[in-house]
Image (cartoon, rainbow, N blue to C red; front, side, top):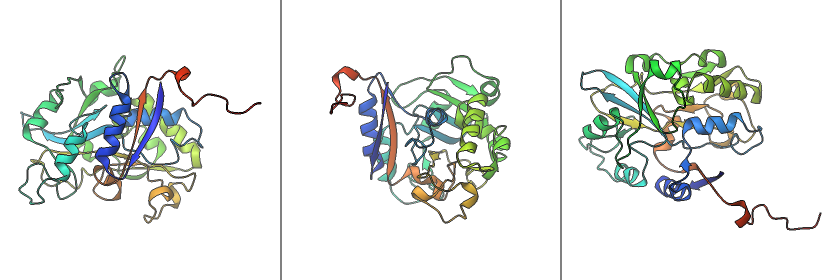
Length: 285
């Protein structure tokens, strides 16, 4: 399996190129996949030294019983296709538009999209397993790469938001869901803490700011990274791009940039090394 980074100034183009590379036998990396790669990479690897768009999403929905929940999909959900982003970007800016941006720059989704994802049905016809948070936290044997996790909205609201201590984040439900499980979260947090020998990491969410819970909406969490630079304690809120190390986010400010503008995806697919020039020696030793 070989991974390639796809960066474009227009998000749908980056996602399209990543999907084409992945093909039927590969995948576009989700947030758990990116964190797993980081946990197994040296700090000077590019995976640590820039930011990425994960193929994961977090939707605020209402169940048929009237309960507000947050549904996290890893491996591609409602916004798994360039066409769905195009529909969002080109929607009317009028507040009454049903598929445009919310006031906090989440993507509005339709009632059908919301209902289907709750049942593990995606727009392309794919069906994925759906786990409750309690089930997910206990651990799922052979957890599939493509799945959904449902968390009560009130629990999501209480999750840590800001620069938080690494040990506190190990028990944070949102961190556990984003990382792909309890063990995966602990492994990544221990590795991230050692990078700059810092005490905190940014973990951001918008759930305390959403007023209209009747509007189904989706966000793409970001994964920050800096070019071997400062740790979180040095970020006074004015750093951005390669200077910033704000952790992972999905709030309504700078940490929610992955719904618009530039994008950087990672796609992974099987490749035959014997047919590539990548590993050939080009000079005598």
